Image 1 (tube, one colour):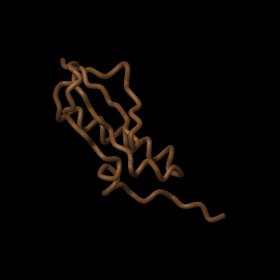
Image 2: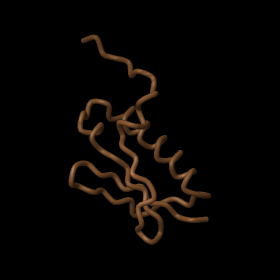
Image 3: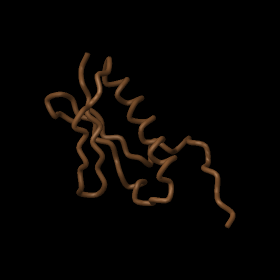
Image 4: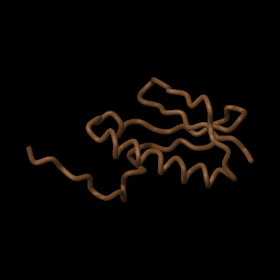
Length: 85
């Protein structure tokens, strides 16, 4: 199985994924990227900069196979509960 790396880009900063993940294909990598972004947004929802971030998914050769904006992954995501204080 091919290995994919999920590197986070926020502006000009790139946070590399040193381990990667073995997945069946690029479509599976898209599914994992979407789930990863949604989990990050769910746990870090107070950081507005995340909506400007993206996951750059690369293959073992370092080629970008997917550039997934965080904002695109949350389009159909249920609304987060709001604090009322």
